[in-house]
Length: 253
Ligand SMILES: [Zn+2]
Ligand SMILES: [Zn+2]
Image 1 (cartoon, protein in one colour):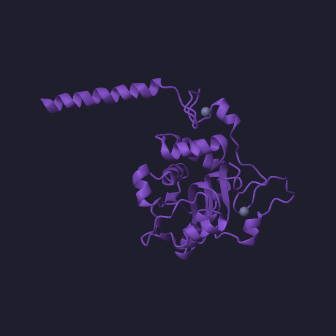
Image 2 (tube, rainbow, N blue to C red):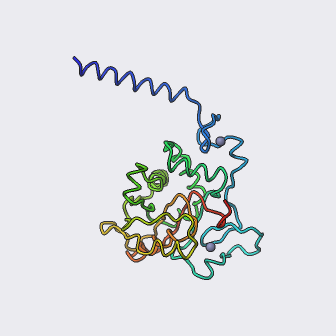
Image 3 (cartoon, rainbow, N blue to C red):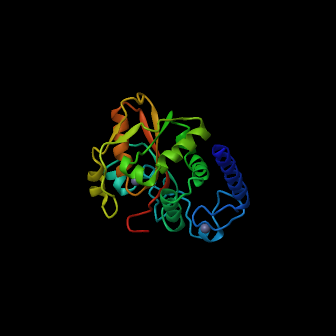
């Protein structure tokens, strides 16, 4: 009898929540303000949001301050020391409401936003998606995975894989050790910080594959470079990188 009562209560609760979902208005992806359509920003956040447009570095997607004439231009850092991946592309700048949005996806209970954000990534990364065979997310160390309960890059990769019909190798890369937080480190320190931090899963078939690496934010190219090196060592043919957000320049947010 008790079991029956429980079940009935559960059903009521579930139905109740369903009704709530319908009644609650869609929320801004960055600030939770009520908006008209799901998957958008409110007017205030949109005013403080920067979609990444050319000109930017053709390798690492660092936006250039000044207008450049040629299209095929690299930033100083890539010119000096080109990362192992082919091209990185990002949807928006990691500043103001772009930054708020990423932090929200990372730490708050807004996994519903991933579907919309993956749609943005699909548009921004169309030229990369046309060239790749499979999608691999940057892994979180298990300890952080446990604290946050999910890997936002894997979440974005899975949604993107479903909408583009590309196979997702969710555990293609493994973190071999926890890397200290990259915050406050310069380019050289960040690079040192991630050396040997990634390896590929021996069960993942990467031989001859063109891989799309997915991450939520790129500050310097250090993490994407370390992941790309591991993928190439495992026989990947080429690596492209698709990001939600790119930090425009050190110290600019
Ligand atoms: Zn907002
Ligand atoms: Zn660059």
